[in-house]
View 1: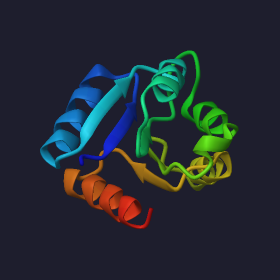
View 2 (view 1 turned 180 degrees about the vertical axis):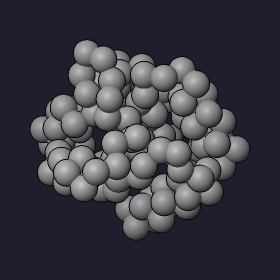
View 3 (view 1 turned 30 degrees about the vertical axis):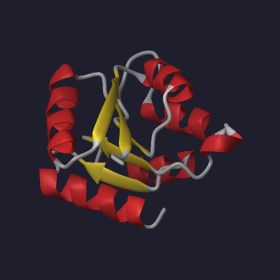
View 4 (view 1 turned 90 degrees about the horizontal axis):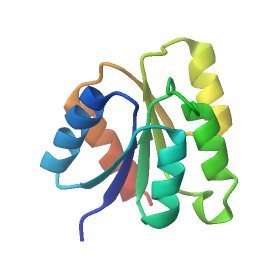
Length: 123
């Protein structure tokens, strides 16, 4: 059975690029355009992992992650941040919000897929 990834990013280009990478790696991909859309999709479609950006309109990635973690059924759901924000403070804020991993853009497609597989293998 294919693993389902929820991809949350406000950039259509990035969503399409990451969706293509993940689909080629044999994952099912559900996309959301921001944190609000991500929560709606998460609450109506089960997923195995979330890949989210930080800088998004309406609800940033940090708030999105905090809201996901506030739901008991999602406290162990793996969440990977992938963002252009590369400062140590950004990483720290991501981990404090509840992310399992923080990657910076641009990331090599192989790195993204390898990290997802490693996290899901340990789940």
